[in-house]
Length: 140
Image (tube, rainbow, N blue to C red; front, side, top):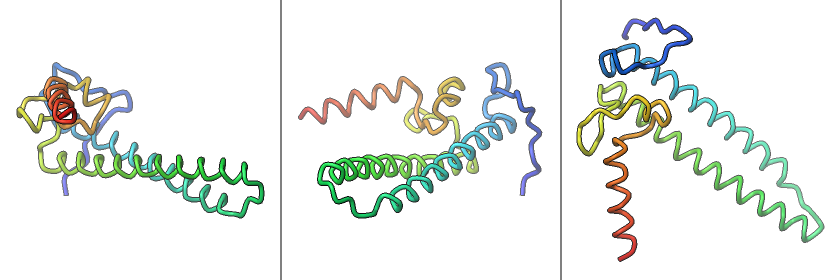
């Protein structure tokens, strides 16, 4: 097991330090774990809410509204589940020393981008190129 890295509460990754040094990796690891905990907590609350709303509602309009709310909750929960999967993948990339590098080009992903979206796997340029290509194929 690796020794714990000291990280001041106000630490932010900076461009003038070595890319993906121990402090940056620890910063992103903690950020990802906090995000995952938050999503799992929201997911548990969603489940409780769904179980509470599973009661029989006699009024047809109320029942329809209840079903719509339930479908929205389930979609949100599915999105959260997919995010947790991406967070786990990012944590694995940290473990394997691959975090912060574009999976398409191998270039460094900007710290600004990673801070905003720590599950990013591509540089902004590669992501835009990928999305343009996807759009073209979708139109076929």
